[in-house]
Image 1 (cartoon, rainbow, N blue to C red):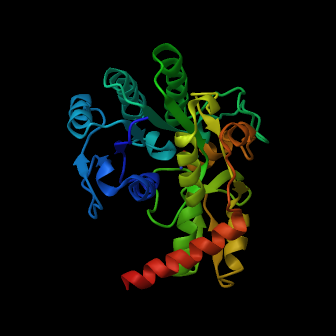
Image 2: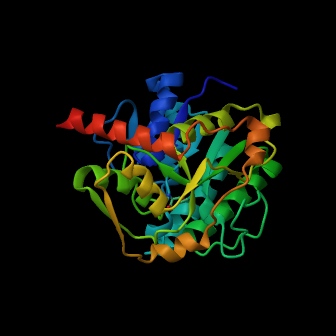
Length: 317
Ligand code: VAH
């Protein structure tokens, strides 16, 4: 494969910011072109405004920068996506199908598509969710991502486009606070515990969800993208997770470090979304195909989150 010149959509987001750092460390700042709908207040390298529904602008950027690989992260997440289903479909799917066609036309070497545990639904086995099962997602976010998975597999089979994808569980990180998701509580809780000593959870205490810590997300994503194609047995999307937690178990883990921390519960519309997903995942195919092996469990993640948020806040103050 040619020396990668990477274009990232949704680069200002929770995963985009961290992936940008990792790719620029690997390949050099100028080899990663970040794009997003809004300006990056703190760009660390090439940045272009891009509305991903503007496929002509994307084609122009790919040509201008001689892009060889794309990480297409731009999307509306599960909770925000329900506020405007038609817009969510337009952004999360219609735009993606145009990008798949553009990737073939522009002979892109490799394309990453983030899928999600949001593709699981009420008929999906809740424990040790298999790689293949009944998937009837209840959100437009999940429907758009499941459809995207199937089109990615089709473009690999029909047009030999090298599409790679992971079903991300809830992603926990300290660099960028996520928004519009159902798993955002697992990030918000840390910041509120440190700032106010209390948190009101929008999910019930025993709502168990699969999670992964950002360093493992980045390492796993790059492992998949750098794996020899013969190791990538599927182009739909790999199940992946590191640990599962509930709002109550995460609160208990935080209390080990902040004994005075208090949590209360006021479930909202996101409770039904969370209950439509699953609790634990079988990610054995990712482990056997390309060596997925998370380093962080909940205990080590909590320790790392709290210490890094404290460092971040001392730097700001
Ligand atoms: C969301 N964080 O909550 C995203 C994710 C597994 C959930 O896709 O919508």
